[in-house]
Length: 360
Image 1 (cartoon, helix red, strand yellow):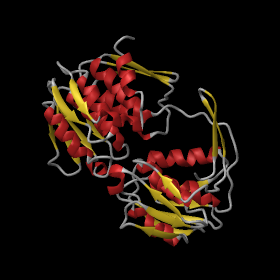
Image 2: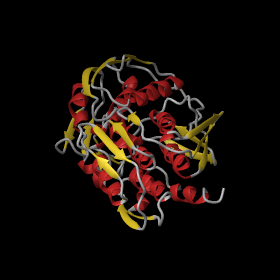
Image 3: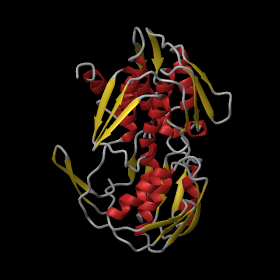
C-alpha cells in the first residue's frame, strides 16, 4: 500500500522495488503491534493523510508514545486517545524530540528507519530504553542499505537527514523468537536441532541460550545450527527485561525444572497480545504449576508435574499458544488449547513442526 513492489522469484528469494508512493489512504496492520509502530513513522513521510488501523487486542494497546514526537517532527496527527486508528499527514521534517522508550523499542525502530529520508537532521532523546538488542539490529540493517545512524549509549540517537537507501542483496537470518520455543521443547522433552540461526545474532531472543544453560540443558552450537537436549533441569534466574518475548517459553522451561525459577521483567508484559504475566499465571496454574507474581517486576515459578487432560486458553496470544503446546509435550495426557490458530501470527507451521519432531 505504501508503494513498494514485492515479487517472489523462488522459494527463498523476494525481490523488492522500493519507493514510498502510497496507493491508498488506509494501512491495516491487523493485530501486529510491531507493524503499527514501525509503519506509522514511514507513513508520516508522505504528504497525503494516511490512516493506520488495526484489529482485535491491538485496538487496546498503547500507541500514545508516538503522538507528541511525530507532531514535534512536523507531522499532523489525529488519534483516538492514544489508540488506533491514527491518521498521520507529513512530510516528517526532522528536528529534536524526546521519546519514551519504556513500553517498546518498536516506535524508535520506525523513526530510525524513516528519518534518514527526512529533509532535516534529527536528534532523538530516549528515556528508559528497553529491548536494546532490537535497536542494534535496526542500525545494523540500515547500514547494509547505505544509511548511517549513530547513538550515545541508546539515550541519544543522531540521524542525518537527506540520506537515501541503496539497493542490496540481504540474507535474512532465522527467527530466534520462534527458535526459542523449539529449543525449549528439546530441553524439556527430548532433543531438537534448529537450523539457520547463529549464537552471534543481534536478536534479543538469542538470550534463551543463557537460560537453557542456566537450567542445566545441554546446548550444542555448530555453524548455523543449535541443538538443545534434555538433561535433569533445575531452577534458574534470568532477567528478560530486554527480551520479554522469551517469557512464555521460559515459563515452560521453569515448569519442567526442579525447584523455583525467578524471571525478572514482568513490567514488559502488560501490553502484549494479552497481559502475558497474568495469562502465564492463570494457564500454568491450570496445569498444576505455581506461578507467583507477588513481587514487583518478578515472576517466580515452582517446577513440578504438569497436569494433563485439561483445557487451557491461548488468550489470542501466539506465544502463549506455542508455550502451552510445548508444556503439553511433558504432560501425561496432553493439553487442549483454545484459540490455538493464533500461532499463524508469527509461526503458521508451528504445530506441523511440533508434530514432525515426534518422528525425526
